[in-house]
Image (cartoon, rainbow, N blue to C red; front, side, top):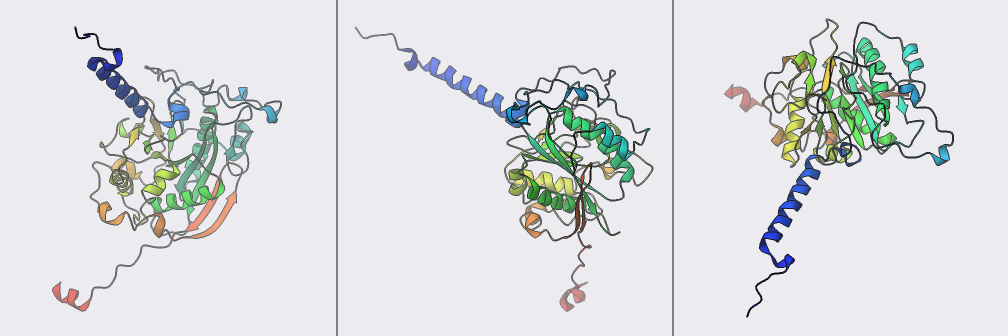
Length: 356
C-alpha cells in the first residue's frame, strides 16, 4: 500500500499558505518603510483631538544634559514628549533674542543634537527664501522646538537669493543641498517653504528609506487637502540617494509654477513613487502678511511639462551659481548666492525669421 500522508513541507496547501504569509509580511514592511529607524515603531493615535492643542515648547525642558557624554545612550525609539496637535499662531512676532533664550541647546549655525541621548537620525532643513524676515522669525520660533521634540540631530539652512531678479526656488534648493552635504553626511534632506509651520509633532522630519516623502499634505489655506492628487510642494523629504537619482531639481523655473510638478515627474521617471503623510498628521499653517499670494494658493492642476526630455540635463549636473557668503548665525546657517538671471533665448536664424 502506498503511503498516503504527505509531510508538512510536501503539502501544496501548506506551501501556498507559507508563500502568502511571506508576501503579506513583506508588503507590511514595504508600506510602513518610512524610515526603518522611526516610522516602524511610531504609534500615531487613530484619532487626534485638534481642539486640545499644546504649546510647542511644552515639556522640552525635560531634555537636560546627560551627566556623562562618554556613556550617553542612544535616544529612545519614540520621544516621550510628543503630544500631537500644537498651538500655532502668528499674532506675536517673537524677537531673535526670545527664540535664542527658549532654545538654549541650539548651537551656532542653527544646529542641534539632543543633550540627553545620541540621536538616531540626522536631518538637514533647507529653506529657500528672499525678503522673508517676518516669516523667518515665526518659522524659527516654532520649528526649532518641533525638531527637538523628535530627538533629531539637525541644522537649518537658509538659502537667500541675492539681487532683485526673478525668484528661482528650485535652483536655491539645489544650492542648499550641495552646501549642506559639504557639512555632514545627512540621512535626510528636508525641503521646506518658509511660510509653512507644522501643526502636529507626530509628523516626523525623517525620510522614507525607499521613496521621497511628502509631509505637507494638509495645509490650512488649501482646506487641509491636496490641490490635486500628484501635488508634491510645500514640505518634502528626500535622502541624498533620492536626490542624486533624479539629478536634483530643475534650474530653469523662474518666478513661475511647475518646479514641484517637475520633481514629481522625475521621481516617477526613475522608477520611484511618492509616499505621503496622512492628512490628520501632515497638517500645516500658512503665514500671510498681505504680500504676494503664495504660489501654492494658485494651484488647480499639474503643470504641462517636458520633464522626460529635460531632466537628465537640467539639474545638479548643470547647476551654476556664485556663493557670496556662508555664515553660521545662532539660529541658522545663512547662505547668500547669486544664481544669475533668466538665460536669454537664442536669436532666431535667418531661415527661422523668414518662416515666421
